[in-house]
Image (cartoon, rainbow, N blue to C red; front, side, top):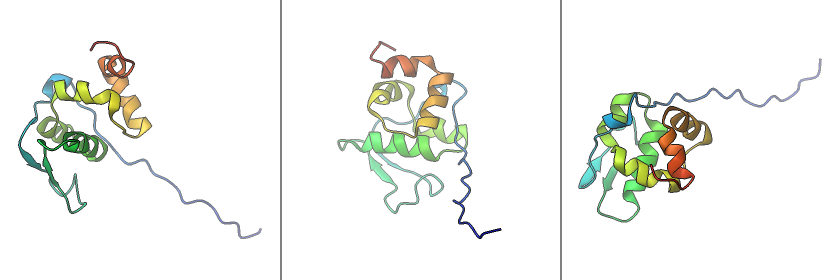
Length: 113
């Protein structure tokens, strides 16, 4: 049997989806420092008063959180609905969130949440 190169196996990284959007009561202003398990980039501080930093914070938390408590601590439901249509996140995570919360899909499609 020839020695064929096989692509490495990809195991899906776990991610969290909240039980309810109403549980997302995180900050919407100030300087937020994410714990290392959410942001190990060396720039874990997010000044939400600077343009674009709240979007960066939300993308990071959504992509890296593996437990709902992280989502509840750092995300705000109303802000999430505003940012959702413009936010880039991996397709499988977006799909899971939109399946759980159709109001996010409506927001992305341009309808009122």
